[in-house]
Image (tube, rainbow, N blue to C red; front, top):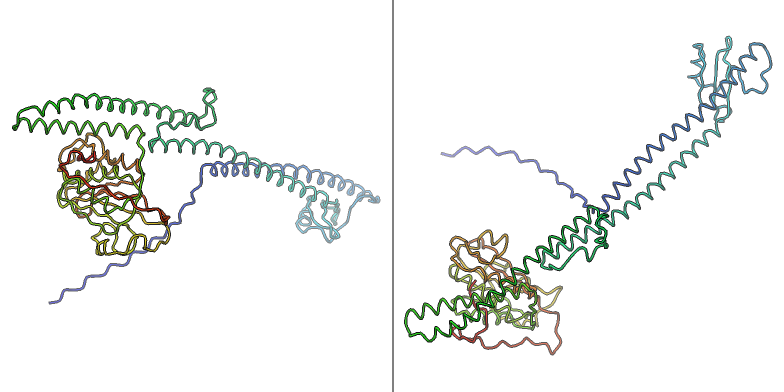
Length: 497
């Protein structure tokens, strides 16, 4: 048996595409609003003035013409000559509407023409005939046109002046708001010394003359000052505690070495070493928070740098170099970042932990984040022999595990100190990732935390692109021999996150 075909649903009509709205800045919105209001006021006033002047001027001409009509009717009744009056009996050029009005025994006035000229007609019945009197109207019409021209020119001048004044005022307001926003962004980026008062227009000495924009700037300065004071107090407290703990911890560690060998000594040394690492981490965080750290930049082969850092952890970690690159960085700080990310992946994630070095857009291979289908970097031509077109691609290092992934709070707000309460990701002090973020900020590179679509946490480092074609004396600096994981003289900072 064959199943009956399902009825096809009618296709949904395509939604009309919406045109993007034109984004206007505040200054132009204020200037356009002021100009529109000025034009509307000028138009209303122009119409009122025109109507008032036209009513008065035309009324005066009509009044004089009606007076001449009365005189012409009196002279016609007495049979006296109407010489000196512009009167005509039954004129052919009398407007039809006015003639109809006279036939109904009424008088009236209307603008018309007489011998090709604009005149004001007034007419009234005179027996069986129509008595009409005309007055020149050309000068009156020209006067009204000149009045309209003057009103229009005055309106344009007034609108232009008001628009310029509104644009100037809006520019001042917009500039002050832009300065306040720029200072707020600098504070967000970590520059707690930024203040609007030192970059504004010097209104701090007149508190009574402050407007709303100055009040917002003063409130931002107050918030920044309070935040800076609290953060500095926290930094001083952290540094003081770490410094005070370092000396007694060093003495306790030395004293613990004198204890007899056994399980108690191993447990005590293990806990003391953990406490010593925590103290060193707190000292490093205090130095990063103070903003006094400066990188020692040099050129290195990224692949060798990553292999050395991962080898120094002593953990089973796979390193994949898809495309190698020469980067300009601080070896010690980058080593610290990579060690913390790898140790954090082993402590809180699940194997396998893979560190991938790639240069997206460097030619060949799939998209970044996918399984590479290219030959190893040693089978490729040297980096300097690759064709250079446009800006150099950005080298990327990815550290990935296959565990439960980063918690949502870390993805949205970043690493936080002494907070590692993610379900299934173990426990810790939350300082390793914080130090990694701080060191990345010192190096000026990007560090992003994401979760892979198929599970697992991903930490992605985007390093400084390689510099443009180098002079002959430019050579990557050779790496020192990586110490053994058990070597106590190894580079500092190889502590888990």
